[in-house]
Image 1: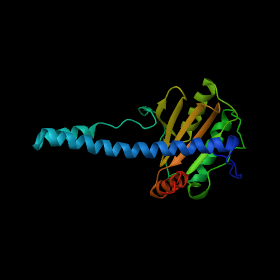
Image 2 (image 1 turned 180 degrees about the horizontal axis):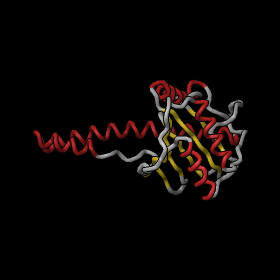
Image 3 (image 1 turned 135 degrees about the vertical axis):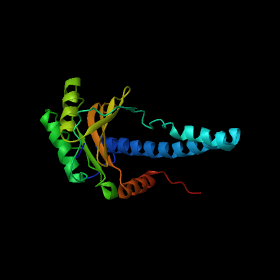
Image 4 (image 1 turned 30 degrees about the vertical axis):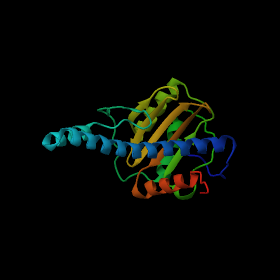
Amino acid sequence: MPGGEGSDRSSGVGGSARARRGGRWKTAVAAAGSGVVACLALGAVAVGSVGGLGGLGSLTGLMDTPAPDPLDFTPVPAAPDAPARTGPDPAHAKVLAELAAATAAVGLPRDTSMPPADGAIADCVADWTSTGPADEAHLAALEAALAERGWRVTGRRGDPIPATRLTSGTWTLELSNGGLLDILSLTATRSTPTCDEAFRRDEATREPHHDG
């Protein structure tokens, strides 16, 4: 995931990676907003249809139903022997170092031409990209290396682009393999009030503006 220091590029591989990263954040934010609206709408229907305490019971049942994952990940129960991270929440530099160490431990080559996140979100994104896709053996070894460093698998997604979601503290890591660029990429994003606001501001600058 983490990319090395370098200038931002709006075209080529760097531009494609940045566009893909921005699209993923846009999808997650839009899906989260849609989930809130849908939940409120369904709750209103339940209360209006049943009324009284029965309506409230129906609303409670709807609220207890987990919303579908906006990125189509299937939840993975925590392994009983999964090591939990101890100590303070990992800082940006530590996450970058962990991704670099885990990928190096299993012999995955890094593409140093990929630009890192910049601006207000620079401390909220840590990413690392390989020069190509990884085989099943390397993926399994990479997951094990990340687990040793406190990352826990929380979700998986199948085709068209297989991916694994891991978490550590306030960080969520998406490990995807293949896709249009046919590479292995690790992208960790941090969820804190400061980072959430930074992502919203960054997304707003990417939205096309039209003169009215």
